[in-house]
Length: 177
Image (cartoon, rainbow, N blue to C red; front, top):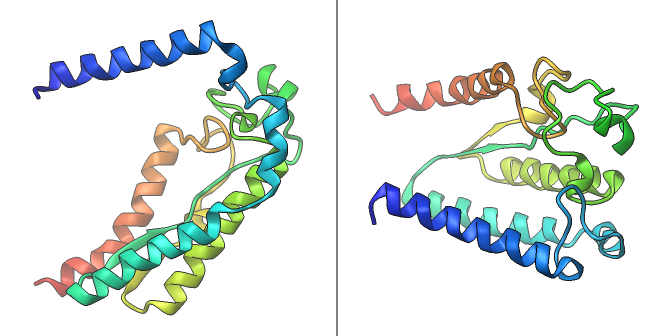
């Protein structure tokens, strides 16, 4: 499939999803948050063990092949004064205010889930000496200069994030020479 057809198929699929959402709003999440009755499910963190198992399987396969894997934690920025109203009124320490944290659930639940996934990556890196860990959550500066919203980086933030990855990969380049 050529790129034009692929892009057209993606647009058509998006249009179909948005149409279903408009025609049956009770069955689909809203544009800026899940349905209120769904939010309570976010307090049961069930994805982190599955995530850890799956990434662990990738690491095991890479070890069998003698390949290195770069792991990076998730860098989430939630200012202390975060609120949905503050986000909507653009009163928080973000640059562009693209997606509120509530898009994924209750802020406390989302933060806990990201921490649980980051902890899983830290454990995996500790158990797999061939893995290279970049703790982006610890390394990334916080604030509007680097974040458009809780998880989307500005251009400058993306450059900083990428520089951490490149710095971690430089020793790999030396190993292959």
